[in-house]
Length: 292
Image 1 (tube, helix red, strand yellow):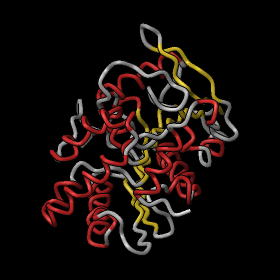
Image 2 (cartoon, helix red, strand yellow):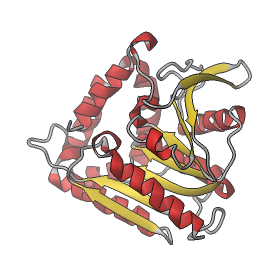
Image 3 (cartoon, helix red, strand yellow):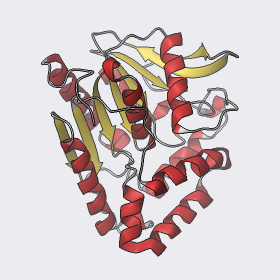
């Protein structure tokens, strides 16, 4: 299955189906965790044990099922959390605006409610990578490593506009038109951040082991400008630049997967988590040291 941008949107639409039509992450039983003052119910799957707690953040509009091919294997050697953000999957919607800061705060509430203990290994796909970075900046001493799966990069849209402003604007309009209605308000809040080229972080991201997985797949005629060869080259360079900012940062490039690497080549994500854990065990970039 080749998950292009349109393919990922189709997956998002599928994840918008009623709860009874959904299937939880294979191998990990999902439950409901009460968080916040109201409280709200969050769909979460927690399994495994070990020195590290691996927290998975799904991409825009996706729920915990995005990690069904990865989380069960990681749970063999570590504590694992996959969850559906508010309004996703079987999680209650919440009235607060769906900003990066709000989503980060709600992850903090979930961690507290589920009594999960650091050190944390954070794994984020696409938009989820922005949330991972946000959490790491707020809690640098709790984070031992990160894996970013074909991550969103706030510098990407500005770079594309320099290359071709009209086609970049067309991408934005096309994406907004086919995003399911329930996610449009969140996209409206996210787009200005992506356009600005600046991610609003609370502080520095700690200098911990980091693996960045990058898809450079070219499959037929590109439906979006961001899928063209020149745009993919920019993304690859931005991902490489991000990895270089860490003392122990690595980029893994694949042409076999589209944007959904965790679904098409789950072994790459599993291996990346192992690499980060091994590096953290060796003290390569201890949590709380340095930062970017």
